[in-house]
Image (cartoon, rainbow, N blue to C red; front, top):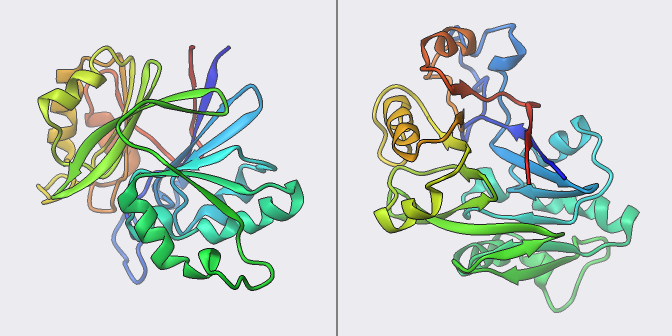
Length: 257
């Protein structure tokens, strides 16, 4: 049975529009130029698994009318990827469900620091109920969905990308070793961060993302984690090579299993 991937957000850490910015992208009336912080949701057999819960997590769940999730899988510990974790309280309450979180040791340390009240010995009523599941580079499953972690570098910070069958999701990266690239080869659908046109110390720019897509040989590549500096969605899309597309918030794609 096919899986559905929903792009909950496709923006960079500040989102688009950026506060106080009046550039053409931030002023655009095209909804595809409005980008919440990057996250996806994978749905299979009625089970929803979210990758990253950034500051817009509540808004994303409401927009997609999500009633339950089976787990949250984290890529790394930056605020634009973890800040919305407190919002699992609604799922705790309505579903009588403890949030199942899957993360590396680095992310776990950040969650325990940022949400210390959720892990305190003396728990305040109504705090989020969270179970932390430690992951490494070994494959794991969440609700029957198989995840193969791929380590990428975000400047010097290790970040987990994930391969799920013929689909690979890479966000917040600017370098991948040959050993980890080998895990991506054969991917039919690739999601890849492409921050802007200019080079950046911790993200692939547009040129680098296109080059990596060609190296991997994916049939289709969707670009995400996009800043207002990249340009207007429709104008950039017209420039892209065949098979490479800008993702947008709310986009749904089917992944055969």
